[in-house]
Length: 135
Image (cartoon, rainbow, N blue to C red):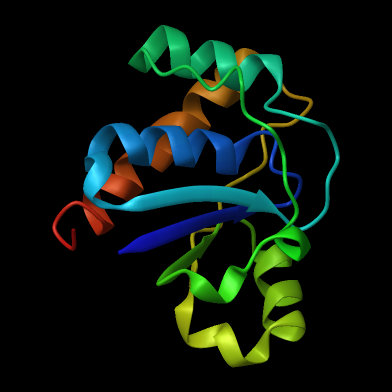
């Protein structure tokens, strides 16, 4: 089983989701992340700090990637963390739309650390609610 988390720039939400899902679901599921476009090269400091402090997860070595640079169709589930990105991917990859799942989560980019904590908690809760029993 495989899951791809996608947000806008693969610098905040999707790397956080990747790290949390790996912690919660373990190694029996292949978990990766990507962005619609590349904004930065890696997870931003606040995302790294929150995951490390709250959950003991190290995403400091994350390298951002675009969905255009991976074989998106090879994933069983593609969880998209932004409504804009969801629509863009439906238009770009219409034959994969049945694999798309929307979790519309506000982007914490440019906000304070409490926004990153809130985002991490929302993602963790969604993983536990929707993915733990499935995998």
